Image (cartoon, rainbow, N blue to C red; front, side):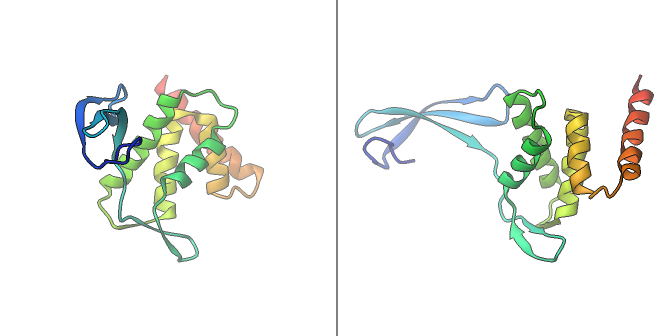
Amino acid sequence: MNCPVCNSKDTKVVDSRISTDGLSIRRRRECNKCAFRFSTIEEVELLDLMVVKRDGRREAYSRDNIVNGLKKALEKRSYTEAGFKKLVHNIERDIQKKKRAELTSQQIGEIVMKRLKGFDKVAYIRFASVYRSFEDVKTFQKELNKLLKKDKKKK
């Protein structure tokens, strides 16, 4: 890790702590050349995962695509940043559990919807309506009815 002040490559880790959400590690570092102290955050990253789009194109997995889709679905909804980070982490963990080099965008969409349903039901319906291309009110109503039936069973 290069020092952000003098750009020296000679830095050492002074302290490491797991973040409060348990999803990353915060490292306190010190430059051996200029003694400047700085922090870095280490997170798990999905590498070498290809996403097969509906039209057959393949592209590298991008966390930003999931984050942007979730933010659109959660627009004007109440949620904490920590809760959002945990949601994204859980989605990526579910993707990793598949242990595959390639997943379809449909498979990823289903994982997102499964996690979003437990996080925020309104956002889930918003995401599902775009993802599943609801064509009319009846299709929308069917999805709402499924959601309502599951809620009644839990009570």
